[in-house]
Image (cartoon, rainbow, N blue to C red; front, side, top):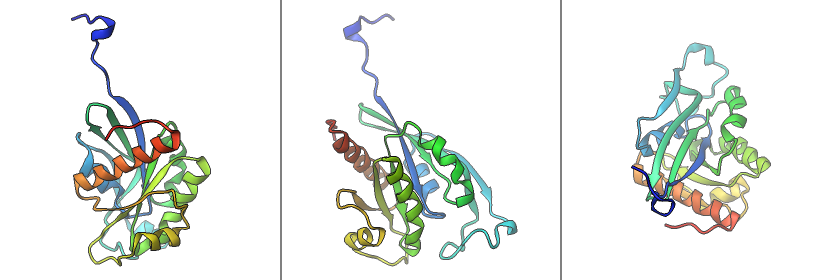
Length: 195
């Protein structure tokens, strides 16, 4: 079937987004929960070789770790297709971040209030690159709860950077975080975005 130029179906805009944060913050979980396709994962089992290297404080039950990236896709309405790239959280794998960040619209930084300081490398990285980001506080069961302004103060974030609560296990919650990022990035670029 041949379409005249004006009859061609409008293709959605492709957007690349990173999902970052500390070790065990829920990046793999978020990408998997929200992806409409089976997510690609590069997880390996944690072994005794990580003793003294990996800090398992507050995430003692964690058995695997992302060594390269997670990948998933979600369509928002008819307008956008988001390609999600989950970054590895451990310092020894950070060398892949530059490649993953190339061409991205922005990033979601997942925060775990049990290990809030683990967010600093992600915040610093995206601030240095000038990459728009939002902070999503992943509400782990039994984790300390704080007001969002307390999290902002602890992470020394500019008032313009959105902070939201989420449950990375839930598709709708993760979807709302991604929408917040797309809107924030559009505001910074002064581009109109539908809801």
